Length: 160
Image (cartoon, rainbow, N blue to C red; front, side):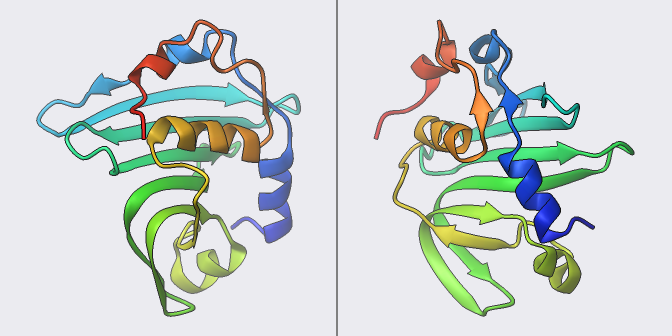
């Protein structure tokens, strides 16, 4: 279990985007599904390991997830942030439903009480497609590097 302080430190620590970030995270169609998926592994300056996963529906442009995972030394993964498309979500502990684009945030409380580290989400108006959600996550989670330098990801991202 990660404490809230550990979660904050992981989100805030500087993470280097690889020079070939746009090429390495190219979305590929998943066989027998309506989704394209891309992923890339990233290491922070301190040696912590992270993974970015993009899952985008090929039919419904509002159905996507941009996920930041932390991978601990025993290879257990923790979802630190999940930038979701437009749909309904219920924060089960607070018994509050939200509808729209939203950001899931890892919490100690949701791990303990709900066994789902990223069960809590907040509504957002900072993005309306997965490309903008990826950019928002890059800003929010302290990634450094030029994500769009000759990047094919930009061309793949839908426009609002």
